[in-house]
Length: 239
Image 1: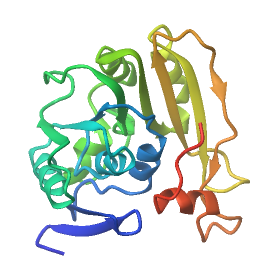
Image 2 (image 1 turned 90 degrees about the vertical axis):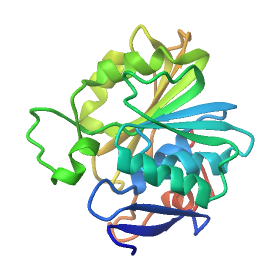
Image 3 (image 1 turned 180 degrees about the vertical axis):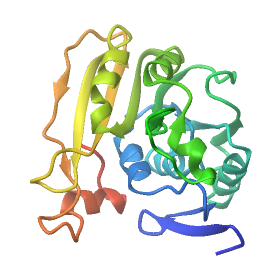
């Protein structure tokens, strides 16, 4: 640990991410999101934080050019440091700014792990984590904005709370097709707590609901073999 940050290893140590000790900290959701991204030559993460998902995706796609957009100056600075420290400066860039106003261009794929709560939902995180956990913009605004930055056939991929699925599907309706829902359960006998969702710009294909993934074994103590393989960077999400 160095001051207010920690250096954390991901994907069997292939990534080292310096991140805030008190603010937003990347974990399972970031790795699941990165493992769910579809191959593309030009990718963008909206709200990249210190860059864990962004750089995990860069590891997956060695020929891709990636952009991370982050509005928090401290997180953006960490992301830039992590890009350099992990050797990705030639093809990963960080744009400091709000995804709703920054000039970010067009991409073949966009992925995001947006704040899981909207203002007024009763969630009160620590002040240092407020911006990462609570958003001023509803999901339909996020999805509309990012869909506009996809090229034709481009894929939007996100991870969110399972109880937000109806809002996600409503926001994608008319903007993205070929929507696929991949539930994430804590264990086989538990309801999904998270969902991975992706949609394709310009497609009219119908929705697909997959079986999804159990993250832990029956006891809840260990990761399932499938989840363990994803978290070690040995497998990707099966769409």
